[in-house]
Amino acid sequence: MDFDVQSATMPAQISGLNTLWVIRYLRQHHPDIDLAAMMAEINRGGPFLLHNLQTGALEPVSLQHLADARYWFSNRFMMVFYKAIETRIPEPRPGYTIGRLAHLAHPIRRAAIIAPLIGTQHLLKTIVRESRKFNRTKDTYLLHSSRVRTVIRLVHHEGIQMVDFGMDWHAGVFHAYAVLAGATEIDVQWQKRDAHFKVVDFELHHRYPAFWQRMYRALVFNIPAVRNAITKAEEIQEEHRRTILNQERIIQSRTERIEAMQQQLLARERMMTEGFIAGGMAHEIRNTLGAAQLRLRQVERLTQDVGDENPMGQLLDCFRCAYGLSLDERKVAVQTLRGLYETRRGVRGSLKSIDQAVQRGLNVADRLMDYAMLQQSGIRTICDPGKIVRELVDIYGTTWGRQGIAFQLDIADGVFVPAQPGQIHSVLQNLMLNARDAIHATGRGRGEIRIRVARQGSEALIEVGDDGVGIAQEDCEKVFQPFYSTKPHAGMGLGLSACRKMVVACGGRIAAMGANGQGALLRVVLPIRAAKTENSDTAAPPATNEPPFTPLV
Image (cartoon, rainbow, N blue to C red; front, side):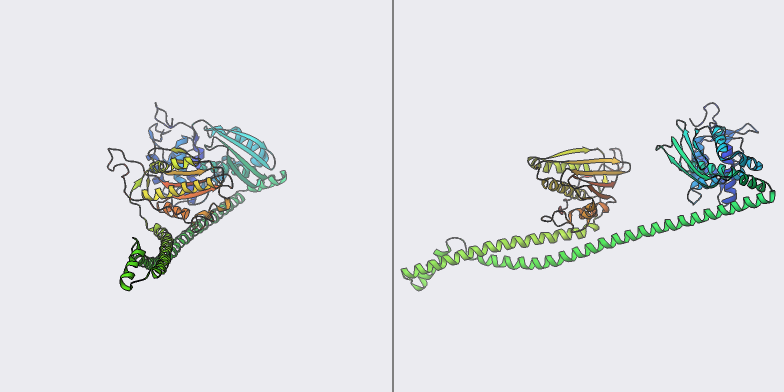
């Protein structure tokens, strides 16, 4: 619990010795921070109550309490306190900076000649042994101690929360203790052994000067004027270090933003270029093939005007009536007409084949046009990808089952995504057809397609996997490029590129994973939209009569 039920006060877990220096540091180095407003914000997340040591009154935590080493605070309060500080100091690892300067306020600083006599090893051992006097949320162990390396382990008690800021603070404090002991060239790193900071190890690397060097430094440092000068120099040095780190962080952040914007611009330019090229190609192909098809059908109609019912007999009757042909002349005419008839039949067959070829070209142009128009598709409704998977399995399951392909489904209920159902239908259909082709390419005559639909936090996860020929790792990104295909004798290489366009238009992302001979996995991640209940203002996902997109394989 975070406070005692009887007294309604926070448990005494962390000493005010820790908060004392933090408040002093904030006032000195960040005077622009409104500490009163920060405390008001912290207390709104309470209750964080304690008894005033002078009046005995129960009151919320204030700056006066934090600046008084006699008070104790709860672990939960410290987590909120850390977060409030971190959001107000725009620099990397502010906890480390604050902890690193804590030695400037440490009581042992007033007798600085003692610490170098004790030495780094003995001082850190003392700190580890007496750490519970200042913090009751953890146990501290000294795992290794030498003149150049020290390893300290913190084991937090059950139910204790911790964040990076707190661990950076500890790292800075250990650095400060090493400075007090006279160590130089100090480097401190920490590593958590589990996701919840239950066990955290701190490794200190340092150089330990000779005894006479430590004594000389301690004696000189004890001279008030020298001590003040060194203290001021350390503060200036630390201020410069923070300024440099902050500038580097700003430069890095802006560089990353610029690079991200450049990538977005390149992606948009690429999509516009693809759409322009595909649309232009489709337009020219449609015009050319359309005109050719029109002329072909005109010729076909001309051949049909002759008629199909005994054309030779009709022509012979016409000739006999007009010219009075003899028997021999009739035989010659019959042979000539038979040749003409066979030629006409061959011409009509050729025209039909040409018309079919032209129609295939027009279909290609239509698919190019569909591809060019994908980025203009808007989100109009929400749909259930699990339902679409089941519909597609109903369509293909029996036929593919006879080909030795089985389906394994893992579909969670209530997963809805904001997208056109036709787009999701087209994406899933393309992925399933690709999986089927990959299985056929193995030559085994059997295989399995695995489809999973699940909720993953605020996103919907759709996976289509197979045990087919797989995708080479170097091709896992290339397969989404327009006109790139791993099937050289089939398809146009637009299927997965179109899938990516549709997924991105829905605010999602798609990725391919696999290896040669080990199958493939296509993963689609889309923003999720919860289904509405019957009592909600909006009904569950509406049905749609929108036809699915044509698969672009």
